[in-house]
Image (cartoon, rainbow, N blue to C red; front, top):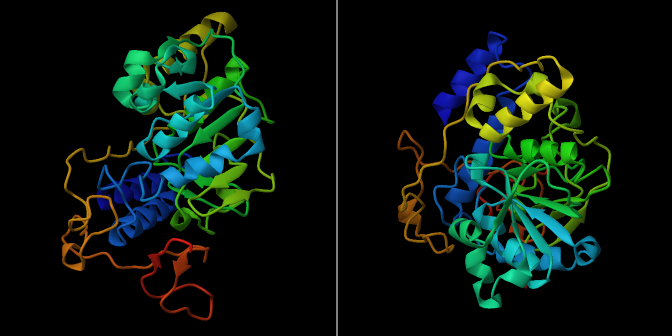
Length: 345
Protein backbone atom coordinates (compact mmCIF):
# COMPACT_ATOMS: atom_id res chain seq x y z
CA UNK A 1 0.00 0.00 0.00
CA UNK A 2 2.77 2.44 0.94
CA UNK A 3 4.57 1.68 -2.33
CA UNK A 4 1.39 2.41 -4.29
CA UNK A 5 0.84 5.71 -2.45
CA UNK A 6 4.43 6.74 -3.16
CA UNK A 7 4.02 5.89 -6.84
CA UNK A 8 0.79 7.92 -7.01
CA UNK A 9 2.45 10.90 -5.30
CA UNK A 10 5.42 10.78 -7.68
CA UNK A 11 3.18 10.48 -10.75
CA UNK A 12 1.01 13.31 -9.44
CA UNK A 13 4.08 15.52 -9.04
CA UNK A 14 5.01 14.82 -12.65
CA UNK A 15 1.51 15.74 -13.77
CA UNK A 16 0.82 12.24 -15.05
CA UNK A 17 -2.32 11.38 -13.09
CA UNK A 18 -4.65 14.23 -13.98
CA UNK A 19 -6.79 15.17 -11.01
CA UNK A 20 -6.27 11.91 -9.11
CA UNK A 21 -4.84 12.73 -5.71
CA UNK A 22 -2.88 10.75 -3.16
CA UNK A 23 -5.09 12.30 -0.43
CA UNK A 24 -7.79 9.72 -1.17
CA UNK A 25 -5.41 6.86 -0.53
CA UNK A 26 -4.45 8.26 2.86
CA UNK A 27 -8.10 8.16 3.92
CA UNK A 28 -8.54 4.64 2.59
CA UNK A 29 -5.42 3.44 4.39
CA UNK A 30 -6.64 5.01 7.64
CA UNK A 31 -10.02 3.30 7.47
CA UNK A 32 -8.66 -0.09 6.44
CA UNK A 33 -6.03 0.02 9.19
CA UNK A 34 -8.55 1.07 11.80
CA UNK A 35 -11.00 -1.68 10.95
CA UNK A 36 -8.26 -4.31 11.16
CA UNK A 37 -6.74 -2.94 14.37
CA UNK A 38 -10.05 -2.86 16.19
CA UNK A 39 -11.38 -6.19 14.87
CA UNK A 40 -14.24 -4.47 13.10
CA UNK A 41 -13.09 -6.15 9.91
CA UNK A 42 -14.70 -9.41 8.82
CA UNK A 43 -13.70 -12.00 6.24
CA UNK A 44 -12.31 -11.79 3.67
CA UNK A 45 -9.30 -10.30 5.43
CA UNK A 46 -7.24 -8.26 5.33
CA UNK A 47 -9.76 -5.69 4.14
CA UNK A 48 -7.16 -3.52 2.42
CA UNK A 49 -7.95 -2.80 -1.25
CA UNK A 50 -11.50 -4.06 -0.77
CA UNK A 51 -14.92 -2.69 -0.05
CA UNK A 52 -14.37 -3.80 3.55
CA UNK A 53 -16.59 -6.37 5.19
CA UNK A 54 -17.38 -5.73 8.83
CA UNK A 55 -19.02 -7.26 11.87
CA UNK A 56 -22.81 -6.89 11.97
CA UNK A 57 -22.93 -5.91 8.30
CA UNK A 58 -26.26 -7.73 8.09
CA UNK A 59 -27.83 -4.96 10.16
CA UNK A 60 -27.37 -2.50 7.30
CA UNK A 61 -29.76 -4.67 5.28
CA UNK A 62 -32.39 -4.15 7.99
CA UNK A 63 -31.93 -0.39 7.64
CA UNK A 64 -32.33 -0.61 3.87
CA UNK A 65 -35.53 -2.63 4.21
CA UNK A 66 -37.10 0.21 6.20
CA UNK A 67 -36.48 2.83 3.51
CA UNK A 68 -39.60 4.05 1.73
CA UNK A 69 -37.61 4.21 -1.49
CA UNK A 70 -36.70 0.55 -1.14
CA UNK A 71 -40.25 -0.51 -0.39
CA UNK A 72 -41.46 1.26 -3.57
CA UNK A 73 -38.63 -0.04 -5.75
CA UNK A 74 -39.10 -2.80 -8.29
CA UNK A 75 -35.52 -2.94 -9.63
CA UNK A 76 -32.50 -2.53 -7.32
CA UNK A 77 -28.85 -2.53 -8.31
CA UNK A 78 -26.46 -3.75 -5.58
CA UNK A 79 -22.67 -4.07 -5.69
CA UNK A 80 -21.28 -7.63 -5.57
CA UNK A 81 -19.06 -7.20 -2.49
CA UNK A 82 -19.28 -9.36 0.63
CA UNK A 83 -20.62 -6.73 3.10
CA UNK A 84 -23.65 -6.15 0.87
CA UNK A 85 -24.58 -9.83 0.51
CA UNK A 86 -27.48 -9.58 3.00
CA UNK A 87 -28.72 -6.49 1.18
CA UNK A 88 -28.86 -8.51 -2.03
CA UNK A 89 -30.74 -11.27 -0.21
CA UNK A 90 -33.19 -8.68 1.14
CA UNK A 91 -33.91 -7.52 -2.41
CA UNK A 92 -34.85 -11.04 -3.48
CA UNK A 93 -36.88 -11.75 -0.36
CA UNK A 94 -38.86 -8.58 -1.01
CA UNK A 95 -39.76 -9.89 -4.47
CA UNK A 96 -37.72 -7.28 -6.33
CA UNK A 97 -35.54 -7.69 -9.39
CA UNK A 98 -31.86 -7.66 -8.43
CA UNK A 99 -29.23 -6.19 -10.73
CA UNK A 100 -25.65 -7.21 -9.88
CA UNK A 101 -22.53 -6.12 -11.80
CA UNK A 102 -19.93 -8.68 -12.72
CA UNK A 103 -17.01 -8.42 -10.25
CA UNK A 104 -14.58 -5.87 -11.67
CA UNK A 105 -16.63 -6.08 -14.89
CA UNK A 106 -14.05 -8.64 -16.00
CA UNK A 107 -16.44 -11.20 -17.49
CA UNK A 108 -19.27 -9.01 -18.68
CA UNK A 109 -21.64 -6.29 -17.61
CA UNK A 110 -24.60 -6.94 -15.30
CA UNK A 111 -26.65 -9.98 -14.33
CA UNK A 112 -30.33 -9.91 -13.41
CA UNK A 113 -31.68 -12.17 -10.67
CA UNK A 114 -35.43 -12.73 -10.76
CA UNK A 115 -36.70 -13.94 -7.35
CA UNK A 116 -39.57 -15.72 -9.09
CA UNK A 117 -37.11 -18.00 -10.86
CA UNK A 118 -35.01 -18.87 -7.80
CA UNK A 119 -36.09 -21.21 -4.98
CA UNK A 120 -36.48 -19.16 -1.78
CA UNK A 121 -34.10 -21.47 0.08
CA UNK A 122 -31.44 -20.64 -2.54
CA UNK A 123 -31.58 -16.85 -2.17
CA UNK A 124 -28.47 -16.76 -0.01
CA UNK A 125 -26.46 -18.85 -2.45
CA UNK A 126 -27.84 -16.95 -5.43
CA UNK A 127 -26.32 -13.78 -3.98
CA UNK A 128 -22.79 -15.19 -3.99
CA UNK A 129 -20.46 -14.92 -6.94
CA UNK A 130 -21.05 -18.54 -7.95
CA UNK A 131 -24.78 -18.19 -7.37
CA UNK A 132 -24.99 -15.21 -9.70
CA UNK A 133 -23.31 -17.29 -12.38
CA UNK A 134 -25.89 -20.06 -11.89
CA UNK A 135 -29.07 -18.04 -11.40
CA UNK A 136 -28.28 -14.69 -13.00
CA UNK A 137 -29.29 -13.73 -16.53
CA UNK A 138 -26.58 -11.62 -18.23
CA UNK A 139 -27.69 -8.42 -19.91
CA UNK A 140 -25.87 -6.05 -22.22
CA UNK A 141 -25.84 -2.32 -22.84
CA UNK A 142 -28.89 -2.53 -25.10
CA UNK A 143 -31.16 -3.80 -22.32
CA UNK A 144 -34.17 -1.61 -21.58
CA UNK A 145 -34.80 -1.31 -17.86
CA UNK A 146 -35.44 1.25 -15.14
CA UNK A 147 -33.48 0.93 -11.91
CA UNK A 148 -35.31 2.38 -8.90
CA UNK A 149 -32.44 2.30 -6.38
CA UNK A 150 -28.66 2.01 -6.58
CA UNK A 151 -26.82 0.51 -3.60
CA UNK A 152 -23.03 0.76 -3.51
CA UNK A 153 -20.32 -0.14 -1.05
CA UNK A 154 -17.76 2.37 0.16
CA UNK A 155 -14.53 2.66 2.09
CA UNK A 156 -15.48 6.06 3.50
CA UNK A 157 -18.42 8.47 3.25
CA UNK A 158 -18.84 12.05 4.42
CA UNK A 159 -22.41 12.43 5.72
CA UNK A 160 -22.19 16.21 5.44
CA UNK A 161 -22.12 16.20 1.64
CA UNK A 162 -22.56 12.57 0.51
CA UNK A 163 -19.03 12.38 -0.88
CA UNK A 164 -17.67 8.83 -0.88
CA UNK A 165 -14.52 6.90 -1.59
CA UNK A 166 -14.54 3.38 -2.96
CA UNK A 167 -11.56 1.06 -2.98
CA UNK A 168 -9.88 3.13 -5.67
CA UNK A 169 -10.62 1.12 -8.80
CA UNK A 170 -13.54 3.25 -10.00
CA UNK A 171 -16.00 0.45 -10.73
CA UNK A 172 -18.97 2.02 -8.93
CA UNK A 173 -18.51 5.15 -11.03
CA UNK A 174 -18.17 3.21 -14.27
CA UNK A 175 -21.22 1.07 -13.50
CA UNK A 176 -23.25 4.17 -12.68
CA UNK A 177 -22.03 5.97 -15.79
CA UNK A 178 -23.05 3.07 -18.03
CA UNK A 179 -26.48 2.91 -16.38
CA UNK A 180 -26.90 6.63 -17.11
CA UNK A 181 -25.98 6.09 -20.75
CA UNK A 182 -28.59 3.31 -20.89
CA UNK A 183 -31.24 5.60 -19.42
CA UNK A 184 -31.68 3.15 -16.53
CA UNK A 185 -30.98 5.77 -13.83
CA UNK A 186 -31.21 9.53 -13.56
CA UNK A 187 -30.58 12.30 -11.04
CA UNK A 188 -33.60 11.28 -9.00
CA UNK A 189 -32.57 7.63 -8.60
CA UNK A 190 -31.55 7.32 -4.93
CA UNK A 191 -28.00 6.17 -4.27
CA UNK A 192 -27.51 4.32 -0.99
CA UNK A 193 -24.25 3.23 0.64
CA UNK A 194 -24.10 0.58 3.38
CA UNK A 195 -21.09 0.98 5.66
CA UNK A 196 -19.94 0.62 9.26
CA UNK A 197 -20.18 3.63 11.56
CA UNK A 198 -16.38 3.93 11.68
CA UNK A 199 -16.40 4.60 7.93
CA UNK A 200 -18.16 7.93 8.46
CA UNK A 201 -15.56 10.68 7.99
CA UNK A 202 -15.45 14.44 7.79
CA UNK A 203 -12.45 15.00 5.52
CA UNK A 204 -13.74 14.32 1.99
CA UNK A 205 -14.29 17.88 0.74
CA UNK A 206 -16.75 18.65 -2.03
CA UNK A 207 -14.25 20.75 -3.96
CA UNK A 208 -11.87 17.82 -4.42
CA UNK A 209 -14.41 15.50 -6.01
CA UNK A 210 -14.23 14.75 -9.72
CA UNK A 211 -17.03 14.87 -12.25
CA UNK A 212 -17.35 11.07 -12.33
CA UNK A 213 -17.50 10.62 -8.55
CA UNK A 214 -20.90 9.32 -7.41
CA UNK A 215 -22.30 11.02 -4.28
CA UNK A 216 -24.73 9.16 -2.04
CA UNK A 217 -28.18 10.26 -0.92
CA UNK A 218 -28.65 7.82 1.96
CA UNK A 219 -26.17 6.12 4.30
CA UNK A 220 -27.13 2.94 6.17
CA UNK A 221 -24.95 1.73 9.04
CA UNK A 222 -25.64 -1.00 11.61
CA UNK A 223 -26.96 1.65 14.01
CA UNK A 224 -28.66 4.32 11.90
CA UNK A 225 -29.89 5.70 8.61
CA UNK A 226 -28.57 9.08 7.52
CA UNK A 227 -30.25 11.12 4.80
CA UNK A 228 -27.83 13.47 3.09
CA UNK A 229 -28.91 16.90 1.93
CA UNK A 230 -28.31 16.78 -1.80
CA UNK A 231 -25.72 19.29 -2.92
CA UNK A 232 -23.32 17.44 -5.22
CA UNK A 233 -24.09 16.70 -8.88
CA UNK A 234 -24.26 13.12 -10.09
CA UNK A 235 -22.35 11.91 -13.15
CA UNK A 236 -24.27 11.96 -16.42
CA UNK A 237 -22.35 9.19 -18.18
CA UNK A 238 -18.82 8.02 -18.89
CA UNK A 239 -16.22 10.77 -18.95
CA UNK A 240 -13.86 9.39 -21.54
CA UNK A 241 -11.35 12.19 -21.07
CA UNK A 242 -10.95 11.05 -17.45
CA UNK A 243 -10.75 7.31 -18.18
CA UNK A 244 -7.15 6.12 -18.26
CA UNK A 245 -5.84 3.86 -21.04
CA UNK A 246 -4.88 1.37 -18.31
CA UNK A 247 -8.41 1.16 -16.95
CA UNK A 248 -10.00 1.04 -20.40
CA UNK A 249 -7.64 -1.74 -21.42
CA UNK A 250 -8.71 -3.89 -18.46
CA UNK A 251 -12.49 -3.75 -19.04
CA UNK A 252 -13.84 -5.37 -22.20
CA UNK A 253 -17.38 -3.97 -21.89
CA UNK A 254 -15.99 -0.41 -21.85
CA UNK A 255 -13.89 -1.11 -24.92
CA UNK A 256 -16.99 -2.35 -26.74
CA UNK A 257 -19.03 0.66 -25.60
CA UNK A 258 -16.38 3.13 -26.73
CA UNK A 259 -16.00 1.43 -30.11
CA UNK A 260 -19.78 1.46 -30.59
CA UNK A 261 -20.05 5.16 -29.73
CA UNK A 262 -17.14 6.03 -32.01
CA UNK A 263 -18.82 4.21 -34.91
CA UNK A 264 -22.06 6.05 -34.28
CA UNK A 265 -20.35 9.44 -33.92
CA UNK A 266 -17.91 8.91 -36.76
CA UNK A 267 -14.99 10.13 -34.68
CA UNK A 268 -12.63 9.05 -31.95
CA UNK A 269 -13.52 9.74 -28.34
CA UNK A 270 -10.86 11.28 -26.08
CA UNK A 271 -8.72 9.30 -23.68
CA UNK A 272 -7.79 10.21 -20.14
CA UNK A 273 -4.39 10.55 -18.48
CA UNK A 274 -2.30 7.58 -17.49
CA UNK A 275 -3.08 5.98 -14.16
CA UNK A 276 -1.18 4.01 -11.53
CA UNK A 277 -3.60 1.13 -11.10
CA UNK A 278 -3.94 0.08 -7.44
CA UNK A 279 -2.95 -3.41 -6.32
CA UNK A 280 -5.76 -5.90 -5.86
CA UNK A 281 -6.67 -7.31 -2.47
CA UNK A 282 -4.76 -10.23 -1.01
CA UNK A 283 -6.71 -13.44 -1.48
CA UNK A 284 -5.04 -15.44 1.27
CA UNK A 285 -7.03 -16.14 4.39
CA UNK A 286 -5.80 -15.83 7.91
CA UNK A 287 -4.26 -12.39 7.44
CA UNK A 288 -6.59 -10.72 9.89
CA UNK A 289 -6.02 -9.90 13.49
CA UNK A 290 -5.55 -12.67 16.02
CA UNK A 291 -8.04 -15.50 16.10
CA UNK A 292 -11.07 -13.34 15.52
CA UNK A 293 -11.51 -14.52 11.92
CA UNK A 294 -13.77 -11.57 11.24
CA UNK A 295 -16.05 -12.26 14.21
CA UNK A 296 -14.87 -9.43 16.40
CA UNK A 297 -13.13 -11.73 18.91
CA UNK A 298 -9.47 -11.29 18.06
CA UNK A 299 -6.90 -11.22 20.86
CA UNK A 300 -4.59 -8.31 21.58
CA UNK A 301 -1.53 -10.46 21.05
CA UNK A 302 -2.62 -11.04 17.45
CA UNK A 303 -2.52 -7.36 16.44
CA UNK A 304 -2.69 -6.83 12.71
CA UNK A 305 0.61 -5.50 11.37
CA UNK A 306 1.45 -3.53 8.27
CA UNK A 307 3.78 -4.66 5.55
CA UNK A 308 6.79 -3.57 7.60
CA UNK A 309 5.77 -5.60 10.61
CA UNK A 310 4.81 -2.51 12.63
CA UNK A 311 1.70 -2.48 14.75
CA UNK A 312 -0.86 0.01 13.52
CA UNK A 313 -2.59 1.78 16.39
CA UNK A 314 -3.45 5.26 15.15
CA UNK A 315 -7.01 6.25 15.93
CA UNK A 316 -9.30 7.08 13.06
CA UNK A 317 -9.95 10.71 12.33
CA UNK A 318 -13.64 10.97 11.71
CA UNK A 319 -16.96 11.62 13.38
CA UNK A 320 -18.01 10.70 16.87
CA UNK A 321 -21.04 8.55 16.13
CA UNK A 322 -23.44 6.47 18.12
CA UNK A 323 -21.88 3.21 19.24
CA UNK A 324 -18.36 4.63 19.52
CA UNK A 325 -16.70 5.24 22.90
CA UNK A 326 -13.60 7.45 22.67
CA UNK A 327 -10.94 6.82 25.30
CA UNK A 328 -9.74 10.42 25.29
CA UNK A 329 -10.73 13.50 23.33
CA UNK A 330 -8.58 16.54 22.61
CA UNK A 331 -9.62 20.16 22.14
CA UNK A 332 -10.63 19.55 18.52
CA UNK A 333 -13.16 16.93 19.57
CA UNK A 334 -11.26 14.03 18.02
CA UNK A 335 -10.14 10.97 19.91
CA UNK A 336 -6.41 10.66 20.47
CA UNK A 337 -6.55 7.04 21.64
CA UNK A 338 -8.00 3.84 20.32
CA UNK A 339 -11.78 3.70 20.11
CA UNK A 340 -13.68 0.46 20.13
CA UNK A 341 -17.08 0.07 18.61
CA UNK A 342 -19.77 -1.14 20.96
CA UNK A 343 -23.28 -2.10 19.84
CA UNK A 344 -26.12 0.09 21.03
CA UNK A 345 -28.03 -1.30 23.97
